[in-house]
View 1 (tube, one colour):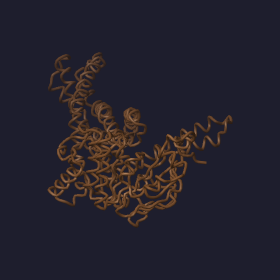
View 2 (view 1 turned 120 degrees about the vertical axis):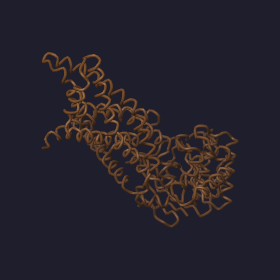
View 3 (view 1 turned 135 degrees about the vertical axis):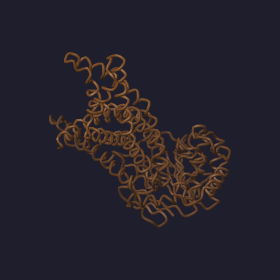
View 4 (view 1 turned 30 degrees about the vertical axis):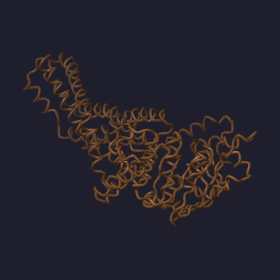
Length: 275
Length: 256
């Protein structure tokens, strides 16, 4: 199906040398439409969160699926990230005789950046693509239409519940990732670098400021919003049967990852600019 | 009960419905007949408010629905139920939960009453023993019958069927035709979309025939049988067609 932009370009380009300009305009028009639709879906989902009916059972189910179901992968992510940071950090600090401070490096980098971003990327892969493929399958098998026919608002039932679960659970999963990463760093520091546990934990906690904790919780909540909404949007936009389901899943994963990384940059800049 | 008047609908670059007008009286079973891609399913979706027409009027129970927002459409849909071509049962729910879905969502009845309604609906379609199964465990014909049970349990006054006998073996076709006939005797208003002539003759009070988005016939089944219109004759008895196949195979006309 041609977008209005494509129809416009076909009628106006007419084989002239300006075809590339019309192609560019069509592409930009397409992106604008995506932004418009995505924003509209976000608005509907947020309205769905604050208006009845409340899908409590569905929300609890999603919290369990998204939260509890992702604990294992974030534990692994945190553990290996912390261990690698300890190894690499020690190499960099050793020439200055500052290996003992490796825990400061681990705790600050994990709480401020690596914990939220890596947990979000892993969850985008597991949860975001799962949401996209589930909703996409419902779309191509007419289940979304069936929901509407049964008098249910599919956005409220499917999107709002998943969005709330993501916003609530991804900060929790990030806290777990952070804790496990610092623990993984301690394993290496204690067993491989021979750093005393007392010093490790003292420096690790001393380095974390109140502001880091706030940043480390706000970022995952924003990433949760991105993962939930991008997954749902990709699912709802699915066309073309099983091929479409695959494309939506991929689109969800790629878009979420890029948006997470870009948003992380801007949030970091924002928090740095704050007094 | 339902009245479409001068309905036009464009999807993408195609005029899918062109000046479609017909009505369905209360308690009547109307069959919408036509070749694949002629716009039959689109008509059902327009009646249900899943598509908004470009022009024209759609009255359901005396209420104009073409300009309603989603919230008000949801209210109108409470009186209608649709049996989808793929049955569209919710994968993650059991047969019981599927059939009682609307009643549980509405929350007006007690669990006991809903359970009884679900069991009665499943008994009506002959699938009482599948109540605890998942949709994936059912055959195509059984899924369609559960779809009918779901529509029935909702207590809707209007049932819409999209190809209820499509892709089924003759026994299942016969079974579903009988169910529709049984519901006709109960006074439920029904709109059945199909390209299965035998099933259409079996269940219809009146038949509407669609070709490339236009209504080319609206009358009783006997009128269709006796029609001399070459387009209708070609559909009823394709063996008599020596040429003109393309009239049935063509997609809807593109937008000017």
